[in-house]
Length: 222
Image (cartoon, rainbow, N blue to C red; front, side, top):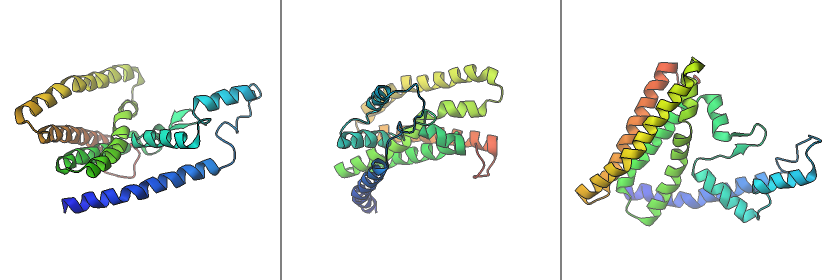
């Protein structure tokens, strides 16, 4: 069963890559570019070219595609040129950051545990692609969730500091603990289990916060 699932995931990779190429090509086939709609008379042609250069729009198309694909695999959907905000943040603002964080954390935890059973190079590549996407959303949105959970904006700085302190503590002890587990067992499965369990606990805490804020109604923004 495990080999079948891994084989199906590997077979899906060319299809996914084909979809990304078609999506990228359709976006590029549209007339103009995001900066063509700027009607500000103070922005001259030289400034527009400089803006296109900074965003990589003057690079060769294969380079643009690879840059876009790498960012996509890290859960980065780009930046909205219209409002100058990350697309993931715009999506989170619409449906709520906790509604994005909970599934991303849960899927990342499950993938980290599935990692234990992956023994082939193809399976490892498939794992890296999928895990990179969901962990990207999981890593980038906690500050947005803090803002959503804070009713009194005078406390936002304190809560941000607490959030980053706990995150820094996790980064500080995570690597030594992983090293100790690897040294004790001599195998990577212990590290993988530790990683999956830690993310699963985080996902459970995020789910708890979501229930406290919005209850069990799945369609409510939170």
